[in-house]
Length: 127
Image (cartoon, rainbow, N blue to C red; front, side, top):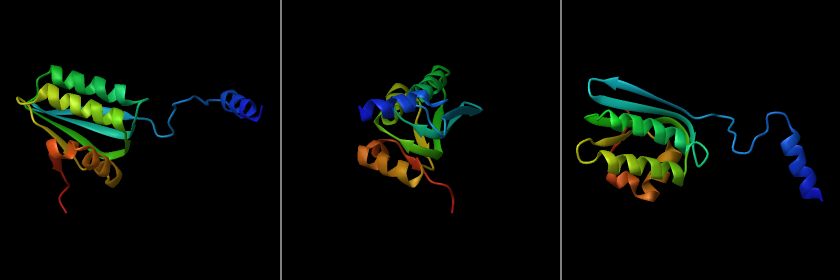
């Protein structure tokens, strides 16, 4: 009974939606000649990975010479986000290299543990 009451309060609370994030995901693309940079801000997880996937698909469709995914303001990346980046890499390679730029410490750890850091070069900001 207690569980039902707690769940009811969560649903009844104004604006409370499962999967809703305090820090929404923002994905934008910048072009310089045939080089694309996709800037990711916020959390990439099972609920938001589709937003990133859609943007990366659009970029891939425009056949860039190089793609950089800027992760400097990405606070979280889970397996769903890893799959999206790995799929983009497979789609674009070998005609278009994919570089990961400035991942946060937490995101870098996820990239390294998953092995994705071994197949996508990581570009760190100059010190």
